[in-house]
Image (cartoon, rainbow, N blue to C red; front, top):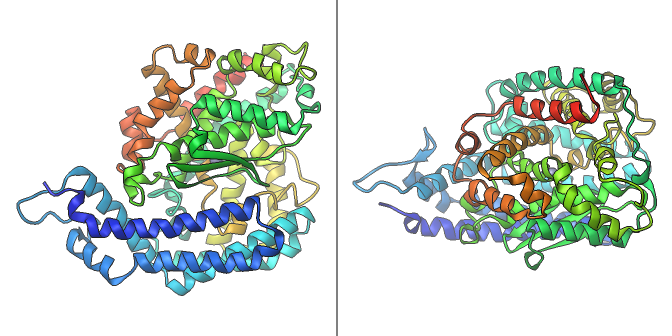
Length: 511
Ligand code: ZN
């Protein structure tokens, strides 16, 4: 049996590439947390150099030589020659490295550097444009980025839609043809349920969530929950940033960020739990496989399934708050007296069409994603003019959610993604919600009395299950294979629709 030992020179190179990528991630983390504003230009150059180097090291002649020897370029799978077959990890590694290599090999290194530099600069312009509610300021950068992404799709190649080529780098194998009917089914279930909720006579009061909650105590409680989830602070840290995110340099150094608003308790709380879910995934990858696809997370949709499972299935459940609500009341003794557990649970699940995606409830969240998905396809497939974005955005908000933002800061400028050139990324959020519902259903079947464990604060039974079933495997299986392995089925909107129907049916006493 040929093992990973045979692949040693390739693995050494992949590790070297990962070192460069980890250094770039650290620079990006710093840019989002502590870098002084003046450092922006220089940082963009630094990042572009590192990304260019990582790219060159992957598409080099020696990698080409190794892969030529070990991989069949037609199937993209390990070449079975000689008497000795490959073992499973080697086969998976070769399949995934080939995937990365062939994608990267299609992109000219000059293009990679240009995109990285533009993305880094645009991100900084976006921060200012959003703060000043000035879409026009961001427009030239965005126009350049959209053009670059169309250029990228051209290099990568596609069969049906250029959008497929972009989405594939975030969610391998996912296509417009697959996702569009799935989203349609989801929409067909969500819109009538939302209507019933909004027509229900039940009015949930959440005003107490907007009393003044001291920032340092919010952070303290966030850390407490992260620790209970099994997030290891000796291998991680929590900082502040404009847009919460998780980044990993190695399974032993996985960092999460949050943001704090003193009159909005859920914001910091749920972004800590959400990013904690991402953080557990990255801390749960195999350190010995660092640098190789076997030690890398599988897809953004699967990554998001981990954060949404924790944030929503666990963090917005009554069981969870049976344990944590008394602790929250202790941390905020003046803000929550007289608010019962049930009132608190209802308040954090209140449905209200709102402007900001990251603060949206579970019922309206996916509608925010559909708006972005439709706009991105119009930009990439139909050549929609970037200047028309604010109008298109507001129109879709009216159609799906019945509300229109008064400013672009709370509308088309709210998300960081486009400024980073991350087009094709948004659908992975909805995929994450769907996978999360499927995984959580399975966890409840397999972990005896899971909800009792959660109600007792024993969250790590779930962490361990996720680690065994999902985290530790890295990219050993394809997304489809992993989902089948864990749940016995394939991607479907039905478990999520059943979950929201049951949850909001109870909260809003729908008949
Ligand atoms: Zn996330």
